[in-house]
Image (cartoon, rainbow, N blue to C red; front, side):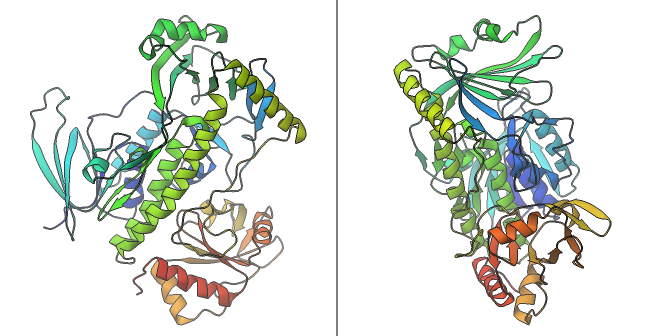
Amino acid sequence: MEAETDVAIVGAGPVGTLLAILLGQKGKRVTLIDKWPTSYDRPRAVTMDHEVARILATLGIDSDNDPLIEYHDELYYWKNADLEDLQLVDWKSVSSSGWRVTYWFNQPELEARLLDMAAKISSIDIVRGWNVTDLDQDTTGVTVSMEETREIVGANGKRRSLRAHYAVGCDGANSLVRETLGIHSVDKGYFFDWLILDMIPKGEYKAEPAQWQLCDPKRPTTIVPGGPGRRRWEFMVLPGESSEEIAKPQSAWRLMEPWGLTPENAELERSAVYRFQARWAEKWRVGRCMIAGDAAHLMPPFAGAGMCTGLRDAVALGWRLNAILEGKMADSVLDSYESERLHHAKHYIDFSQELGSIICIADQDEAAKRDDRMKADLVARDFEPTAGHLVRLGKGAWCLPCTGAGELSTQGIVKMGENQGRFDQVVGTGWMIIGYNANPDADIDPDTRRILETLDAQLVTIGPPGSAAPVIDIDGTYGSWMKTIDATFVVLRPDFYVAATAQSLEVLYSRIKEISEKLQLQIK
């Protein structure tokens, strides 16, 4: 059967829509399918990290200056019941990837923006109000069966099918795609119920600090922004409490009394109890079908990494599917999507669960021991805030042993000609071969050149201010980074992760050939 679309994506949330955009921008035919006629208009995710800001910047969204995104130049505080500091986390700095550590937004607004971008790309077909019921794949494609969503008023049960080269399930925690593919999940048995209250203050509401965690065993509470003009409170549901009762508006307003918000001076936009879980799918790829986002992993929100992890999935899938559909890579490269991203997601699941084990303590004695331990640790390090750390991908399309390979690349401010700004916006994105004070194209052999031409790779020489390099390292970021990873050359992938590093051209070209083999590159 002839394919009607290149990729069928099930689920038009942020993950599925971002993937559709990344494919559609390269001219791929995409069908984005969602069971509901309109997007869900209530808040969910509210925070994103520097890597997501970097991803959004490639779409023209500047998180530092966007009216729908905010940041706060302050730390993230963990305090006990007596409001003593237990932990300080650096959420005020600019990260090594060139963007601030943490940003805040309202998910429906971000979704609307992404969907608007997708709707303007002619090769993307957005199909709403249709529920995927089955996937049937063979050696040449996937047949996606659908029916009108029965919950929609006026639906009469119409059915249709769609033929695609590949299908991706971005259809959430209760993923039908995952179930249809027979994929099992690993469940860590981590269950805590939390009440999420999203508030819109009427007028100015000053929160000091703006972002903090109250580790009070009487009621562990998270207090954070919810995007410009919004605030979020998260309250742990205590043992013996009814989730239904605590989510009622009258209960919600009682919990808000100590914080000065009432029905008279604020709007309760959303009150919902969530069960925080920790689990991941054992497989993310079955033949021509993949899963991503919540369909592949669920994690407690304590690290604010759930949606961020899903958007990373979309980017990792995007460059692979684009290359496969262009005939540049064998589809075996999708195996490395699973191995890289599964390992990465498991790290954040474990980290989120570790944070939750500290926060979700409802026993007074246990909480007192925790407080003493954390206060002593904070004093021992002279109240130095903790910073984020680089998380290496699982085994995949990158080289070992290479210092820095498999990690998110550093990004600094550069100047090229008359243009100055972050590297991604000034030089570009995609496959990059960067040499610091060295030309990566100096003595390239024909085989390596064919590899780079197949990848459409840019070869870039960066040098310090005053040098004759075409790209100038304005703030010294690249010089410091190269020194840290003991490299002269770096190979960057389209998802900003380091594929390889090298000190010499000979080693660089050898590692480029190794990367080509890992990608199963179809050389021109």
